[in-house]
Length: 214
Image (cartoon, rainbow, N blue to C red; front, side):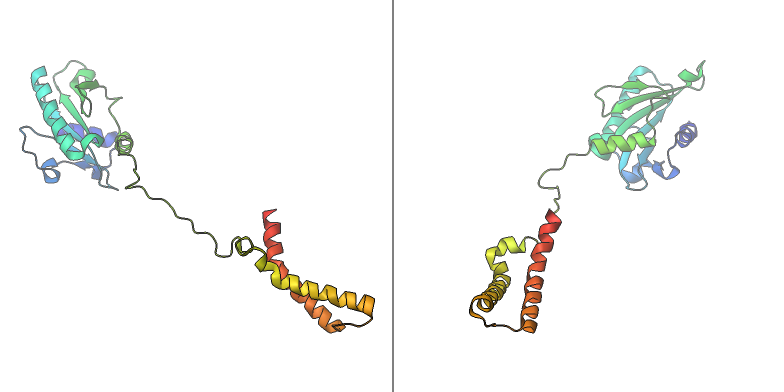
């Protein structure tokens, strides 16, 4: 009976490493009864489900085993884990009655499933993730983005960032006025050229930032 359901799980896409056949090695139980399999995620070791396999027991025994499995699943992983009962009746007339599936946790009452609606491995993983508690300010993380040290430097410094280039430009204007109105130069041609280049170099960073934002 255990082997039959084990093969069913493998055929349904459950990884072999996800099926724990000795549940008490993971979570020793003090209640009467047996949980046949524990399903875990091999990658994260998240405890996804507890499955009990029983014979064709009467309804009252089925409900009792459902309560035991639900209690085990709750201890296994709270509401993130699920609990299932698989009842096997090898003497049943048709295939649909030979294996019956029930969900007992975290549902409030025993819920019968079919082989088609019995969750596959990926469905168990999705249920586990959806049941995870939402992030709170205490356990959430936020990314702190530090501004570039050079970003908005001219704006932070105000007009003081442009004072050197403005003074040099003013000196060039005075030199031109002296030459035009008074007939003498403060700077010769080489000096005027070097001063113009210095003004351009001092103004270039601010001009590049302005064009980049336009």
